[in-house]
Length: 144
Image (cartoon, rainbow, N blue to C red):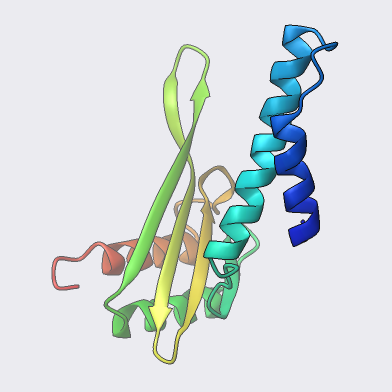
């Protein structure tokens, strides 16, 4: 973290970049100094980010049935979620889903963060696969 004195020194350096440097080095130094100035100004204007308390769950072939049932129960009573997905590009097959990130907001400013690893799910006949499908169905249901 830059001190106020360090900030002032960088501002002074920015206004007095040596002419003996090549244009490329001057531009590089200017960019570096401006970046540090921006960081300092942001730290003065904004509070540091502090995430809400949360518990992270990974859903894959090692996830227990009890864990998925707990998430289903939380999703049933919650009405607020965030969803983000990521895909991978498979040669000659196009994009395929790779990861689904869900956040289930709970009362009292806490949440569950659920990472569903699509390529590491159990077999479709496994109970955890069926429960995971049920969990996603609850989150995407129209009455939420």
